[in-house]
Length: 601
Ligand SMILES: Nc1nc2c(ncn2[C@@H]2O[C@H](COP(=O)(O)OP(=O)(O)OP(=O)(O)O)[C@@H](O)[C@H]2O)c(=O)[nH]1
Ligand SMILES: [Mg+2]
Image (cartoon, rainbow, N blue to C red):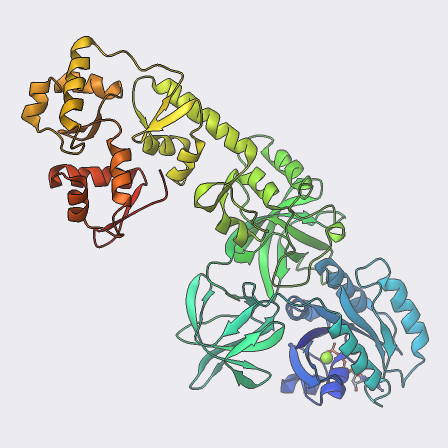
C-alpha cells in the first residue's frame, strides 16, 4: 500500500480530488460537509491502474487546523500539494510546503486543480518557483479538475509511478505507530488508527503505549480484518483492556524505543525560536521548552515523554502563529546533564561536530526513507562513534534504541566503549590497584569503584601490568611483600596437605596447628599466599581457577551436591566456594539453586 497526505491552502480542492479519485468521502463529519471545509483528518483509498492500493490522508487547509494538518502529514512518506488554478499560490500553500520541507518529505506530486475554472499555467509557474530550493523541488506536476474529471487518469498514473519509486519500507524494523484517530467501538473497545511507516503489526501481539503493555485484540486495514499488517499501510488497531490513548500517542515495539523528556537537536537555519513552543513529530504535538546550546543546536524539554531516535525530524512551532519556521533533527535522545560553567557551549560544539566519524546513523526508521547526510541541515547524523564519545559506555541495546547502526562489539556482554573513555578507565584501574598497595582490590570492588555496569568490563580492562588471580587484581611488576620465614613454612605445610585434595580445606583447629590463624592468616592472605573463601575456609590461591575448571566438566546445570562430589569436598567448603565463583562471574546461580558455568575464565 502507498500512503500519501494532501497539502495546500484552504478550499483549493484537496478533498474534492480525493473524493473524485477514490469515490469515498474524506470529510467524515456532518459539520465538515455543512461548512464545506475539512476540520479533521480524512481517510480514503482506491486501486491505482497497476492494481496497487493508494490511501490518502486528507488534511485541512485552514490555518486554524495546522496542528491537525501536521498530525496527518507527520508519519506519511509522500505528499500531494494541491493548488487551485483560479487562486494560485496562497499563504497556507507556502506554510504547508515549508513544513513538508523541514520534515524532509522528498516524494510527492504538485497538482494544479480547478483547471476548469482558470488556465493552470500561471499557478503552475508560480508553484514551481516556490518549490525551488526545497526538497520537493523536482516533483512531477500536472493539471486536473476534480469537478470535470479532466486529468484524473493521468493523476492516477502519476501516483502509481510515485509509489513505485519510493524506497521500500523497513518491514522488519521496530513499530512506532502514531495514533491519528482514536475511537471506541461498542463491544470491541478502543481502536487506534495510524499510518504504519515501518515494521509489521500482528493480532495478539503486545505493544507498549505510554510505557505500559497493551495487547492487540485485532487489526484492520482499509476496513478489512487482517492477522498481520506490514508497512507501509493505513491500519486500525483494536486494543484489549482499559486503555485511553489519544492522538499523538504512539504504539511501540516493546524494548525498541527510548522514551525521553529531552533531546539535543540541530535546528534548521534561521533565528532560533523562543518561548512556549510545540514540538510536532508523527501525529504528536507536545509543549516544549528550548535552551540554545551553541550555533544551530539546542536542548529541548518536553511536557511528556516521547519515543525519539537519532535522526528523527520534527517541527517546532510557536502556537501563537500558524507558520512553522523551525525544523529539528534529533542528535541525542539521552542528553547528558549540563552543570559546569561552559558545559552548554561545549555540548553545542560537540553536537555541531557530530556525523564526521564513520559509521554514522542510518536515518531514523519509522517515518521516512534515509535522508542523505548532506541533506541534513548543518551536517551529518551522529553515528555510534559520536554517541560513544558523548556517553563513554553504552550497550548494543542502548545504541539500537537510540537509532544508530550497532557496530560489532569488541567487549564482553555486548558493551561498546569510546576508545578514549576506555583508556581513561584502564588508567584509573591501574591507579586504584597501585593505590591499594597490599590491600586486596577484588574485581567486584574495582567494578564498584569505576562505576561500571558489568564486572565483565572490569575483567576486560585487566591487561599488563595488571593481573588477576582468584578475583583479586594485582600488578605483575610490583613484587608481593616477602613472607616471613615462619609463614613460608606454614604455607608449605598447607600446600603439602592440599596436594591431593585441593578443596578439602583444613578445619579451624588444623589451621591453628599450621600456624595460619589470626594475624598470620591476614598476612598470608595479603601476600596472596592463600585464598580465604570465607571465615575459616582457607585454600591455595589457585583454588578458584581449579574449581571453575573442574565444574566446567559437569553437565549443566549442576546442583551444589554434584559440585561438592566433583570437587571432592564438604558442603562447608563447596557452598561458600560456589558463592565466590558466582561473585566472580564464573558461575551463575539459577532460581532453583542449581548453577551453570560462564565463559569468564
Ligand atoms: N469547479 C471546480 N470546483 C472545485 C474543484 N475542486 C474543488 N472545487 C470546489 O472548491 C471548493 C473547495 O473544495 P474542497 O475540496 O472542499 O477544498 P479543500 O482543499 O479540501 O478545502 P479544506 O479541506 O477546507 O482545506 C468546493 O466548493 C469544491 O466544490 C474543481 O476542480 N473544479
Ligand atoms: Mg478538504
